[in-house]
Length: 160
Image (tube, rainbow, N blue to C red; front, side, top):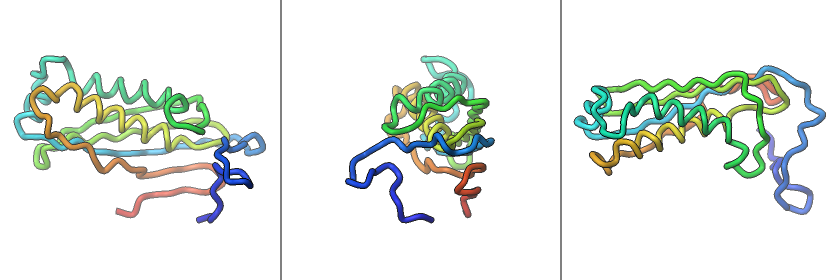
């Protein structure tokens, strides 16, 4: 791990990192998160009975759309040409939760961790938005990077 903060210049001012000299390489990131809810809310989502529509399909689309716009919403984040973005949502009835996983892929000079994390966040927020009429107590949490491959800093895999 480096002690250098790359988004600060020598005077401590925020800056976008210059990645121009870095070589292109395949870069992959996997992120995950959870929306915990009441058992009845999970049942309504599973059965397609939420009045706003198909929650899981809309949440997947929201995640994909958000990942493509990451540079527009995260300051100093580079615009990335994604070559692949997948959002999977699994309903976990034992935990009363929707488990979201996003995988982002590109060939470029910088990684796609922020795109994967943004996809998970937007999908989780969409689930909340679509089901909040029946469950305002839903909790969004555990959003984190699970895996990163490619680039000069090497690979990363969450240990737990």
